[in-house]
Image 1 (cartoon, rainbow, N blue to C red):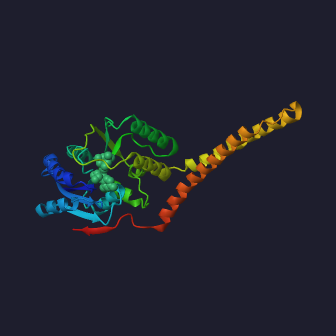
Image 2 (image 1 turned 180 degrees about the vertical axis):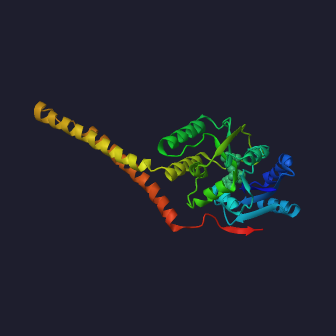
Image 3 (image 1 turned 90 degrees about the vertical axis):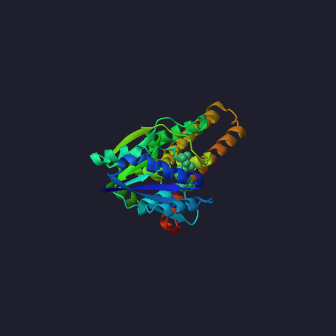
Length: 309
Ligand code: UDP
Ligand code: MG
């Protein structure tokens, strides 16, 4: 019999954990006799009683395993910890907030059992009502990623997926500490099949994604998988020099042949501020990459465990 591990990162999900547990058991009833189940809850340094809720489940059910971080390390780290500890032949990553339907799990299981793929991933059909600003931001992000990187991100792809051991090994083989899972899942390749589902509104609690956090996440994704911004600064520099050369020739001709007095202040002021702004932007881009190198070379562990069963 196959063992399925459910990896569930939880951050302040005290109201969601119990409901999730019940719903998952209900949804996985069709797999009785075909597969066994284990839960791998990762408490990502929650400030509420998420850990107590998980422990209460553990008392009732031996299949519930958990670990708790010493502070909030982020979903990426929590997913990594769960995937590293998972013992299953098949490993599912899913959110604790039931926005992703667990009823898809039996279907994923059957698809993996049939063979012909190493991972069944999901992507949502409808964009949630996040507002025009966020939606166009997301669209811009996917467009930039497809232009700037070798990997192809599926728009609307979720982390919710079931993978076999081969796929999981490949994901865990990427040891970088700046983990951008959407990119990592796409980067490892393998044979992936997609399921689409209708996106549910959150059942309880609230989302941890502010607009600022989303922007940082997008930057993280681009700088993790592309060096185009670095090389783009080279192109921009060349273009700026060409522009300056043209302006220079134009000014010389005007003064020498037409004896026009050089109209000064405004042009110089605008050019100076514009180009020094440009230089700062480019320095910032370099800074982004240097800060990444800095984080990587320190080789800090991606998370610290406070408690586990
Ligand atoms: N999460 C986490 N650490 C964090 C933020 C979120 O482990 O710092 C978990 C959270 O508990 C949930 C999942 O990651 O199970 C997705 O979070 P959320 O629902 O806020 O994101 P969204 O569904 O909006 O992408
Ligand atoms: Mg969610």
